[in-house]
Length: 294
Image: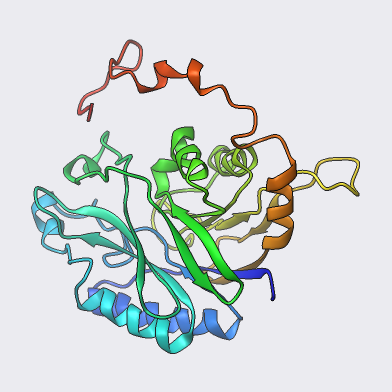
């Protein structure tokens, strides 16, 4: 069995309407399939192009759509037609306020994972969103066999706990839809999350033509050391430029699994009995801010 998983990052600019994004998204998925993709991932909140800043919350709340509605159904059918998994993103209609959501559809057209952004950007307009409450992991059926997949969305990556919880549930690959500038420090976060958890992280951003974005979609395979190499290796196997496009990377699952079975990161030598402070609810200076969710 081939153990190379091809991941396509759809670094594309949104249109002005849901229908435009639907059609452009379909075309991008077709391009991904022609490039041999097993999984195609969209940037954050593709259904409305993450357009939260140009109108009052009451207006963009009306753009929220159901996760089981017509928009997602189109991509379910497309995934089945293309025999390719699709990670579609949307502003999801939800009681009390919309959610920032990823729906992962397998190559048979089945929804295998629905993830809502846990760490909403409450210092800005995302405080009007309903945050997710869990980091689920699903077994994704691929031509390479089953792959354990989880998700983070943009700001989630800034909290080490996000990736750690996914690792502890057996995630081998984390999908990260994104909508912000991917500069050196954010890229370093992704590299660190992949390294410390011994897993792959694929991030899809909007291109530089989109305000406050710059492309730079990446895949880090998480494999820092190989027996035949004296020094550590670069875990970045793809970093796109700022241009719009469909970018692919081939993830060597066999190499990743051998590495996870032998090296010392991840859950190997953790001492969780000492980490109780991480789950305390109190918030102390200098980190006090408005709109805390605790």
